[in-house]
Length: 615
Ligand code: FEO
Image (tube, rainbow, N blue to C red; front, side, top):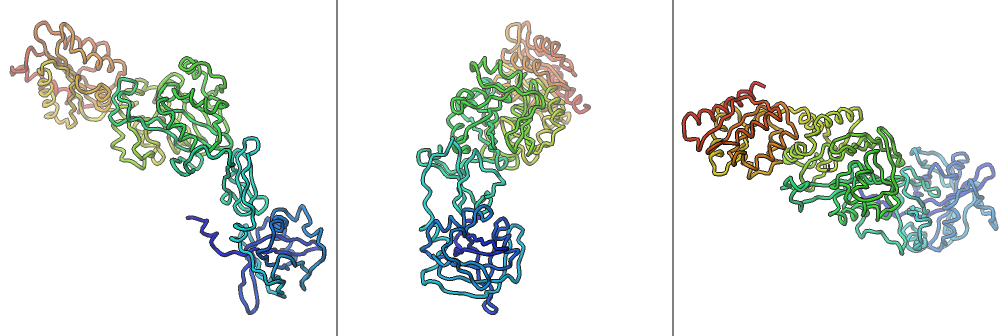
């Protein structure tokens, strides 16, 4: 709804006067209408905060003096911009002009007056409509009546560009011209002159310091709430996350801005996106400065723009915990304006209060989350994050979740999964909060169904696998690949529908690790390479033993030409990593062309499958 449409109603402007207990007072109104002609009645609606309202409630009489187009601005200022509670608006009257009801009327700059007596009233909570009999009416001149539109365009002075004092921002009441100065416009502001609220104020900018961004305040603004904004960026140009995990769907670096009496910027973004990022932040701030830069996590995919942010807002306090600043200063040099917060400590921004909770090792030792109490938003940094750029949809209710789930699990399995126990503890700790929204630093913002992502993270942290098996092989000339197909047949015929077969030399490890985390079964095959195993398989087995996915049913197979090495090396990794081997290892010399080898491989798949189905 565009409420400015109401400005197109043809309002007149009037001086409404009254008298009670020998006190004369008057104010400017635009709400006079004739109700009936026989009997002759008019109505006028008055804000309850006005002194004139109080006097009419007691006296039940008033006059309406109809202003003309010749009315100078000082008349509006005299009757409209000051309260009769503080000044006697008729103190310097040269002569009294009273109507038959004893109330003063305005003889100058008017073309008529109506003398009235209240016969009824309607209470509108903030205003009262007085309905009155017209006791007398006189024409005073032939000048045309002034309309609100005429007043705005021909009488009211145009705002003169002025520098805000002390760097303050300025808002003007659209109705009476009152200027409010401050860091922000309070939600409960009431214009001291015309008594209207926040919706009637517009921010004004001086000529020398125009808005810092050429865009309007509504462009590019993505809101979590009225005063909390998403200001993150998408990265579709980095090939490898942390320089080793492929990003076919990109990744987002999320950042959030809370605009209150104080402004807090939560977790900046990767430095390569600083221009886009600052543009977004400034377009929201419209000249305001950042007071607090919250660092939930030191890793450079978030923190590497910290120097650029502090160059822009050098007075900002950098907020972190006791473990935040040593690594941060090791990366970027000394940080002067630090604020160290402890577990559960709060930081008030005005109407928003932030509270900090430590979640060590999700993802680094200093990792923490920031909880915004008023709206129940957890700014969780890496926790509850996922790969995948945000393709227009920022919130969980704006996208097809199936698209993001795989990339979320891949992110979890390769980044958070190693610390599954700590992730679980963090989930349990945050479970005590009233969480209405989860805003991580990668991936979707969970505003509609945060329980969904909490459920997924809980499932993955508890190593609750799904029914399925991942078969990964390393093969130099294809024979071990043929073996993998035979193993897969055994698993499929035993009743496993989700059988994923990967060539370790073709598929980047993070995708394989993601499926290993997802399913209950893992069968690994490697050919020999000298006395060791196919080289690429070393990285995968290293990652398995590093991340330690639990509750899996493992199997091992491989090929050899002369002295072997593949199965032997896999067995060594299995022993070190305490893999739960549920079937005999199978080693095939040459190609799987002998029936007994085919049977062993088929039975390996079948046995692992049966173990999966029993779990
Ligand atoms: Fe997204 Fe551990 O940084």
